Image 1 (tube, rainbow, N blue to C red):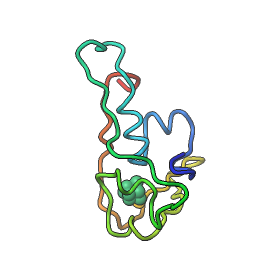
Image 2 (image 1 turned 90 degrees about the horizontal axis):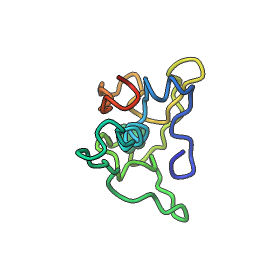
Image 3 (image 1 turned 45 degrees about the vertical axis):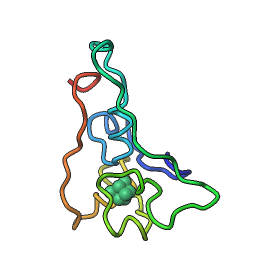
Image 4 (image 1 turned 90 degrees about the vertical axis):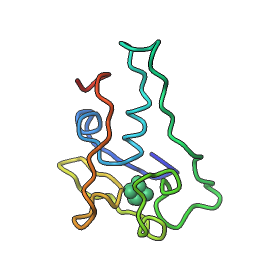
Length: 111
Ligand code: SF4
């Protein structure tokens, strides 16, 4: 959930091994690595959550998203079907969107 809306839904395996929403990527990258707690700094998601009294017209994550496109500012993304039971509300999952590799840090749960 982000900004009161479903950002991504799916099985634990889908979310941890094949996440398809930049907010999910940010959450996964903010999980501390128990093997490297001393050296590694936590990686926060920059920015602030949206004001739910004045919800944005487009994607609620857009002001914090490094992948935001013009459409993200004006049109709320639908829940795109990724696979059986796996959906993500992000325009990057549209068939015509630029291809972006999930920037997930390896080592905590997905070695
Ligand atoms: S719809 Fe756009 S702003 Fe929202 S998460 Fe996807 S790329 Fe980022």
